[in-house]
Amino acid sequence: MPLSEHEQRLLDQIESALYAEDPKFASNVRTGRGLRVGHRRGVQSVAVFLLGLVLLVGGIALPLKPGGVPVVSVLGFLVMFAAGVLLLLGRGRADAPGAGDGASGHGRRETRSTNRSDGGGFSAKMEERFKRRFDQE
Image (cartoon, rainbow, N blue to C red; front, side):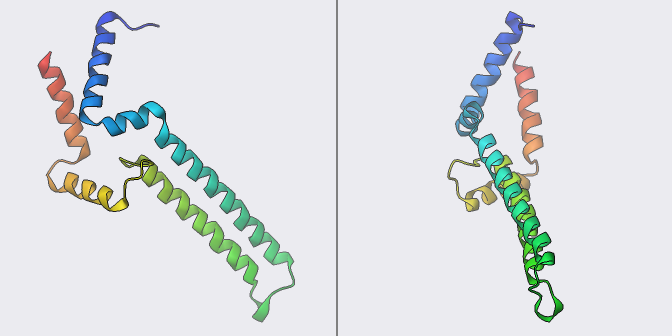
């Protein structure tokens, strides 16, 4: 179902405001770069998890158990745990502003702390922008 002319104009206004307010985010959304980084990190995490699972199961079958401890299985568990951590941290970075564009982690932390300390935070800023747009019409 196509948009009406009024809806199309509103969409164009929102898009131009987005480009004006945050051009880096707008270019990431347009190219889909942030999604690719998150997807790649997820595939890597699954591959590492499967490697850890193979080590875990293979360690049980191997006769290598110094002191009665299946060392290879313990190593497999640690690899699986690392894959889970990689997946969780990877999603956090992919969702963060500036993900995938070479921004340092230090800059992102400053942005987050600034948003919290100003009494509003991200959702409050977005709500205020939303209200301003409707007040202009």
